[in-house]
Image 1 (cartoon, one colour):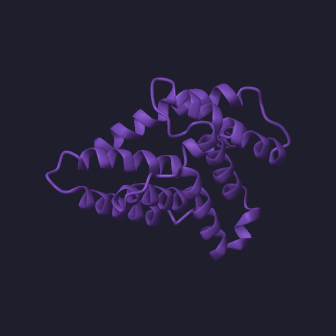
Image 2 (cartoon, rainbow, N blue to C red):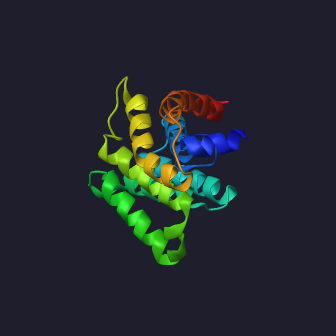
Length: 180
């Protein structure tokens, strides 16, 4: 029943292996690597390797691969004197995934992953500050709600506050779990 409720509210991505978790794992790992006396290039290589191992361990699911590919592009951009560009990385990762697995275009997991992230990017995903998690959660709901409503024949009103509350709670829990 809980799984059905999480799926219906569009918040299943917060408690299952997802790109969200991959991002938090990478951020925690890069923070820890920053304390080591190694160069930025080595930190990035280690971060990408850990993210690749995580993606493989959870079965190379579309959201995880997307997150890993986008994160790799973002990490490598400064090394080649470029600004990280989330929208270009989003499009490139989707195009590459569909090149190898075109049938996934009709898969709900693929659709939710890419629609949610697109809304988050367009809504200011890369910004920071005190309201970051709330804004990210809001845009995640905006991106996933139409698909969830269509596929599950409705969207419970509690889906919006549920996503916002969970979106704020999950990053610190994951972060401290990784540190532990």
